[in-house]
Amino acid sequence: MRKRIALSIMLLLSLSTAGLGIQKKQKPEGTPVLWQEPTDIESRDLILGSGGAAMQPDLSRVTFVKDDPVGHSIKYRVRDAAGRIWVTKLDDEAQTETAASRLIWAAGYVTEINYLVPCVKIEGAPEPGERVKRCEGGGFANVKFEARPEDVKRLDPWSWRKNHFSGSREMQGLIVMMSLLNNWDLKDDNNKVLYVRNGGGGRGELHYVISDLGATFGKTGSFLSHTRNRPDHYAKTKFVEGTRGGRVKFAYGGKNSGLFNSITVEQARWIGGLLSRLSDKQLADAFRAANYTPEEVQMLAGAVRARINQLVNVQG
Image (cartoon, rainbow, N blue to C red; front, side):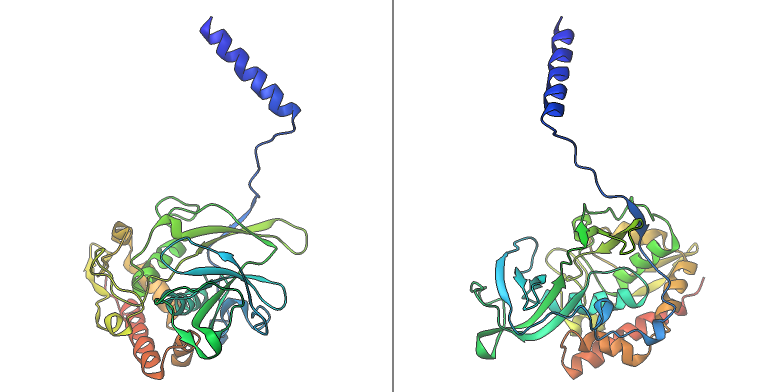
């Protein structure tokens, strides 16, 4: 009798919701994309990054829309003079994320579109506190603008350990890059699937991006010992420690460190070979785009080049 009553209730609920037109929201379908071969890698512009000149924000007037209080950083949602919406980061992760995303994009991975603005005034913005540096005219210093295009839908996070590309050369290469950048915050919440519509009306694409790369260019370690945006720390840390049984051992001490246990020598050499095609100027441009000082640019670009060489020369 109880089972009959329960089934009757479930049937009534389903009929009532159907009558109201309530339907489960369907997720958009598309072709999964993590990496696209960078045939033009030697000429890629690491100053402008994946958005190029066309996507740059119109800074003639930037207005505050609302707080975006997710994660470590201070973030505001803003509107530029062209009416486009952006998410801005206003603290120490703005520089690191700008540079890191350019290096990942240079290797062929899909990324968010962002730009670092050295000084910008945001009309109507609240006072963010001492963590944010100010600049002339009451502006904010070193602000990262991340695009929110109308034709891109943001979906659920994707998992480092179980995803559409698990075990592939491209996913393993991306994991290697997380160690190369000293990204100690490898948690699933920092990943996002972006549905990108096809302008021609065909099947769209599901871009698997790392949406937060701010915890980079410092040293990895425990909750108390790690750092971010410390070029001096980054330049002094170790990268490749050696090999064992055809696997590469990395000096990584952040979250999800077990991901690095299965990287083969071949996979490490593959991503190293791709990155080795970047010129010294391109490496430096990634950090110039993030408004690092000339001394910091030289230090960071030199450290990245040294790490690339380690990957290329890793011995089986």
